[in-house]
Image 1: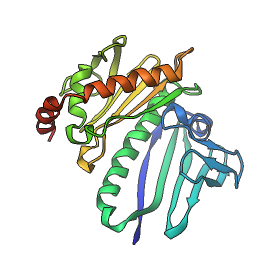
Image 2: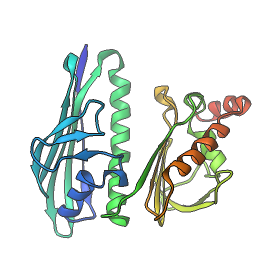
Image 3: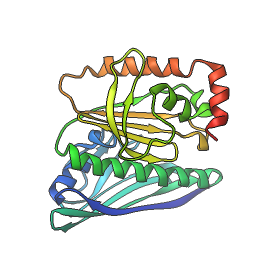
Image 4: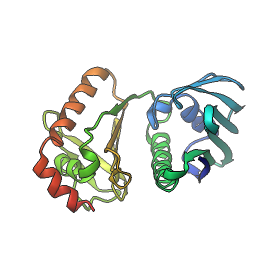
Length: 254
């Protein structure tokens, strides 16, 4: 049986209400993933949910909401409420939906942790890249990473295990140029690295039995999306190809 959940997030954004509105209705690839909303009440949503949904609130700079429904009582609803506070904007975000009863606790835990990371990325986008388009890469990571977790990838990238927010790091994916940036998020196995022209997001999901997640938001001009995706996915396959390494690092990541 489906069971309803609700996840809330509230905080100040380093932007005007107009800039924040633009970020979560137009430039979603800059911090979340590619989503398209028709800019009107009742407009179609595509990219957020599998079957698509509809805009249920459209008050620019103040209130935006979208909802999708399907059989079996399924629904997924996002609600953004904005309050101007000087040069900043206060966001009250609510995510509602349903999870299967036998997976409820783990799914809710995952949703809370991912929501915190996504909305932090929204903050970073508004602070450093507001109004810019991005090439968004959601990379396929081998299923083996569900056992090994992020520790294997972090070590391969050359990111110290104790890396903290504000630390400068150099990531060295084999076969690609080094990537110099600063850690902007480090909560458990979730890691965010910001460079002058990108946000790199790594999700260690072994606690839920899921493969590692890797998402890149690339703002530089002239990026070949297909080539970048191919290079990163080949690299990730190589990282998780060594079974001996998986066994060792899986224990270390617990």
